[in-house]
Length: 238
Image (cartoon, rainbow, N blue to C red; front, side, top):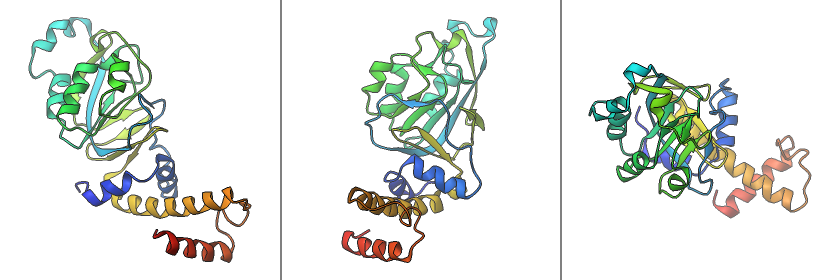
């Protein structure tokens, strides 16, 4: 099922924390990519369907600098094939000692309209990438070329990224906290539920700032809380 504009727009208004709670309610505990951080936490929320690239350990005789001359090289091909609106997710084996990509390749993704990029490895040119108009997430900066440790091997196959399973077409959401992966068949209902949860959390935050105790409020174990929330929603159009 393709990601609809309605669901994409909803996901842009909710947090990865809220989505993780909604996933947990469904028994999914391992959808938040570990040890991946935004290069620029101030960027808008990233949402898109996963397009994947997988690296394996490099074998030196097959991974010389000349491999980039091949127009079908998986890394270069992935940059040109990743659809506009998608999020490229790279399995770099949780190894940031060599860069998954750098500023030129990410600039190409930005120009092509890709929604963002995530790796459990590292990026070179990290300061430059942070300034690009594309959300990017990695473990930490890394200068060496990917060829020194990683061999690009597969495009758009199931991968692991930061110990999280990522299937092509899964919906990837990133904010200032990190990146969560939504199974494609659950994306619509998770988006709708997260919007509802966010409205309640905004109400709770306002009440707490006004001095109200969290007991009976969060979670809403008192009937008065539900009545107050209904009135708040009416006033605020939520």
